[in-house]
Image (tube, helix red, strand yellow):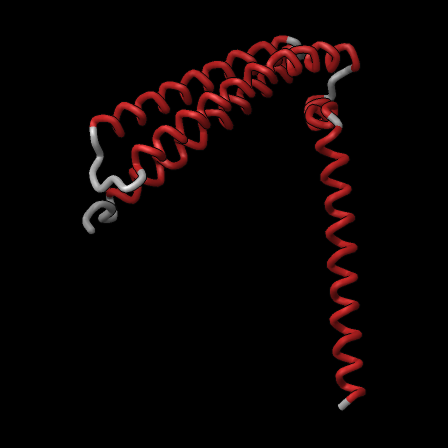
Length: 164
């Protein structure tokens, strides 16, 4: 009895030590990656084989865009909170809810337009062919999430979506 209890406690202690070690290592790796702003664009250099002067121009554009992006995210989060507060306890979609949805949609459209302008600027700081490929990919990513949902929903409509 004592032997099996000792073995069980040893296994639990070993598992806890392994978990703690894995957690600390993962935390350190994530912190080091997030803490280095130049890592944000490392993929860009690699994917488009950009030179140091090209990367310097793009880094400057990126650093100039980040405060604008953060401000837009703050506005969207605040508007989502307003929407959540009018939806709390609501059993119907009221005119206020519709207004908040429209305002949120407007902010998201402004955000997408701001992102697309930034991506166009970055693409112009790149050589022509990689710049075209970059801009096409960023447009696809910026607009694609909505298109994918819309496509899925329109396909579902033909199969009885909404008939429940």
